[in-house]
Length: 345
Image (cartoon, rainbow, N blue to C red):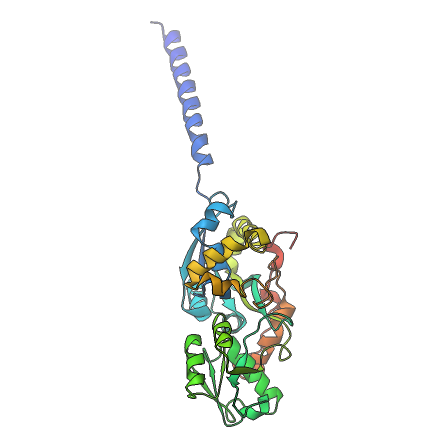
């Protein structure tokens, strides 16, 4: 065989091998895994945090059309929003559920490397015509007005939590010193109703679904709630590490597009029975009881487009500062970014 023939065969082999390698490489690129979003939930299921239902396997398979294609979401449960803040600060979560209290504290203390942004609302309090967290007493209680709480005991679920802040704001507005004039005690939401009926406390706040259960039992009345105490504000909202937003903007946009689509699906009357069924299972609540209020005006208000603004978060944060609960005043505007939501939102 001539040297010329050998060179031709060698060139043909190399060309064929290169083509085969290229053909194999394209499927590998197409099969590249979508970015993973590590999401830390605050641990409230069903009525308190609708995204817990959206995170369910059924929703991932049937409603979240971009999941598995443009992003994959992995969830973990923290112990309340302070626990979520800790995971974000440790860079062990990329997105998570925060309340205005934990959000303001994270900002004031520079706890999250690179900063944190609020990107989508979950649910709102103090909206007239919708549910709020009521501070209730027994029907035979002498407490009729906020001023009557002087010298009394009031139960909240967590010191410096959102309902505790609302209580302190209301007391100040009515001339009472939250530290001296009222004895504030801490106990789980589920224990507050029984403690009130046993007269171990004089007043207590009831969250969903406990306020519905206690109202059905009767014998209690509302003294006040957040409506009229503060402007409507987000109780819980989705927040993200700024570094992750910079690194994976398209994945976050895909997730929020699915989240908004899921909310529209959830509020479609044709899907109500399925949503109630799934939520009842997750919340370990009888579907019949849940159906009485869930996703109605007896429930918290939820913006179907998850819109969020600095103007809605700032008032309760300012109240925290006035109450001495922050090391310094906080302006939230630089830390709120609604641009990752779908354009229609």
